[in-house]
Length: 288
Image 1: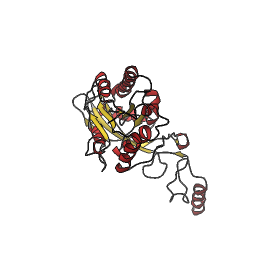
Image 2: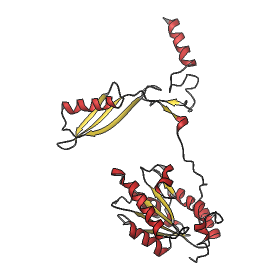
Image 3: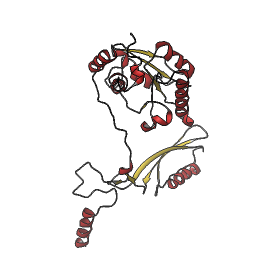
């Protein structure tokens, strides 16, 4: 029996299962191109999912939750939590293994194409290259009343230990707040001659964030001459960073974005490359 075990251990070292690191590789953080979720042991495929079913909490509902998890590929599925959400709904947490594999070689990543600058470097770049203050307008549009994201970027108190854009001496920031209609946003940007418009979208039911973003982009491009449209930036937890072109905006920022990243990007996009950005070149001589 010991010889069989030794042979099996040697086989697993030399030919690990997909998603399973060999013993020689277990000390390195680099996984190997095919991976599975990790629960108790590497590559065991254990995941935990939560969902709500439109059923009152009873044994039938619990059975339906297990069936739902099995239909998603979790087998066996262990129901670890169930709680009534009013008289007609039940919230579930289910734990179990899945057999799905992810090939990390197929994942596309949007790399940051600009350097991170300090607040001093941002102010110096604007003062030197733009020779006026950079004007920024921010808002939550449509019915979105969640201002935490836009406030974290714009308000002086900032986020994650970084001051917001209001802190930068060479920026003029107009925070319009929540539930701003798109025509009002366009008119405000026109009145203050905005260089950039920042929009936060947290409400995402029925893809409201995508519809609102496309409508905003269309409104700005209809209202402004070609080459004079403010730089359009949107952010929120459900946006895909590589979808800016599809949505008609210039940049998308996802979850965890800090004010310093946005400020550095504005310098990269609107301040330094004055010879390649007609939007900035046509406005750079304007007095503050």
